[in-house]
Image (cartoon, rainbow, N blue to C red):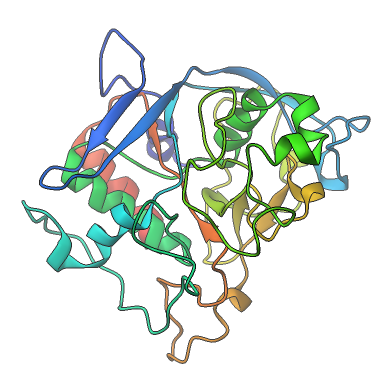
Length: 309
């Protein structure tokens, strides 16, 4: 991974040079506000030891790695927020240059499950989620991106007690999954928050990460690595983390990984198929991260040029 990409994944004091605290982000000209929760970095065990209940073949051996400070969104990105990016007529001023907006959806990707009123945005490809992050940076001046796999897992492991994960009834107090979802996603933050204050981290809709999917991810990461990431070199597969409203309770594991597939967009009639949407993946959404390390505007632009090419 190039040095400039690594620098963008490290933490910075964008919100405050002295206090690393949670903050609320308001979209100027709208009534939309969302909360970013501070996640202090540290060392943790990436993957699972062979004796862990959470272990799978590609999750051993476990490695100790280090994560830097970052902020993560309290909830998954909602349609109310995502719609400002999708529809230029709804985008509150000032308008920004250098942003390409998604093509108009050709079917109702929500399948009637809901848009307005804090439902999670869904069915976008990783490219669309990343372009949204660029739009949000232009709107706010805050460098938003997707979490790395390691950041997501680090947060999840600090967010849940083992007793919660081993009991479907208790887990149902926090997450929407196959047992309680009625085969649809639900409004964000309609269940209890986890220990760190996040909602729907393991359920509702699954969440895009920055990383290209590698089946031997846990084997390839070296012990002691700081802020590990698998740099994306191709469109498929990319790693998705967390369960969703269709997931079995046994799939709501902290180390469970899903790889994106082109079949998620098999119904797309366009040639070539859309790089924005997944017509057959209503279970996919995303959550935002802000790293804590300061960086120059030209570095941010270079980052987006790289991940969006």
